[in-house]
Image (cartoon, rainbow, N blue to C red; front, side, top):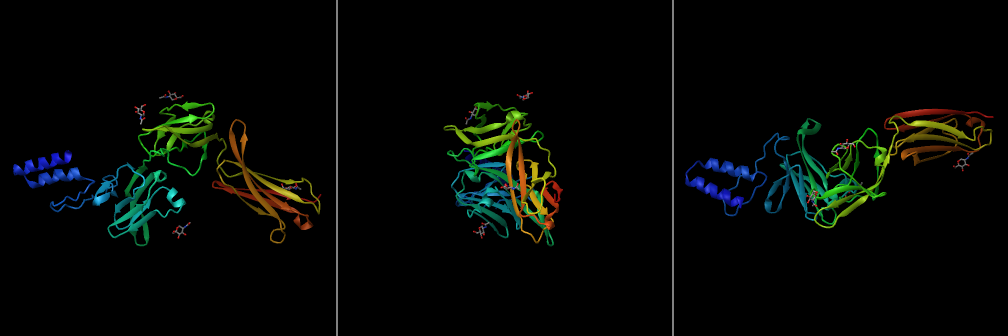
Length: 366
Ligand SMILES: *[C@@H]1O[C@H](CO)[C@@H](O)[C@H](O)[C@H]1NC(C)=O
Ligand SMILES: *[C@@H]1O[C@H](CO)[C@@H](O)[C@H](O)[C@H]1NC(C)=O
Ligand SMILES: *[C@@H]1O[C@H](CO)[C@@H](O)[C@H](O)[C@H]1NC(C)=O
Ligand SMILES: *[C@@H]1O[C@H](CO)[C@@H](O)[C@H](O)[C@H]1NC(C)=O
């Protein structure tokens, strides 16, 4: 319809012998993002892309069939199953795509750079491939290359699948940690941006009402809890309604955590408390910390390098009071048949991302 209108308008303008340029100008504006090969027509100017345009038009383009191109905006919905080809103009281009595709080292994804553009192809996309795709120009100064932040283009691509309204997750029962000073996200993302999504508590059955300041829904993230409190704990699931029957997401266990961040908080003890030659001892190094923070242990002890010991490291989650969850990480060193040379300082070193804590216990012969 609109196409016809433009042609009629152009013809009318030509008829009036108004400058040809004016007509082309209008035509070009309409065709932005599309470069149709017109049968039997005049030579069509190739799609012109403005340079320097992080703020301007996206250089991220989807190749449609029959050599047509679509410039991708902030988000795009596509049909699953059909091979997706994206291009980004430039002779040195970087890409990012959902980490899911790397985790599973997916052979469906391929990236090729030619001298004019880079091409990303994803064959048989599914609902699980829904996520952010972006490309950027890489600028090099001698050997040093970096991302040109001005020329970075991204699009959130939904592979809308009516049988999978929620982006499938490899984890069927996910734990979401709530902290007093941070936003928390219940990551039930959808494949159809039009779907209506709600958040429900399992027991007692209850829908969490959206409140623009406290709980919001973002189809690219999930439910965002601005100011989580212990009241938000429990088992939750999301419900999405599009055209067909409502669908339920996997389940999320929301746990409230109140442990300060910082280097590990350590304690060290030996069992039994008093030791004599020939005894067996366990020296236990314990760290209380945040549920998802990994702790690594290192030991030094008198018989190091020449005496066999046994070291066992483990961790578990412990509910402390009203749903306050703590991760207890432990490293236990067992020394059998204590000899004179085994008495002395046992040092446990525990490390997390925030730092390292060292604790020493002196084991003396009774
Ligand atoms: C990923 O796949 C490539 C090609 O199939 C293979 O060479 C590579 O070793 C794989 N990497 C991992 C981590 O599985
Ligand atoms: C959201 O919740 C807060 C606290 O319960 C309340 O003060 C506020 O009025 C609510 N806002 C809306 C839009 O319901
Ligand atoms: C989503 O909810 C709105 C408001 O409640 C409603 O108007 C709309 O029809 C719903 N959309 C679908 C797909 O159910
Ligand atoms: C040391 O720990 C092991 C395993 O927990 C236990 O079987 C053993 O009795 C402990 N030994 C002492 C001396 O506490």
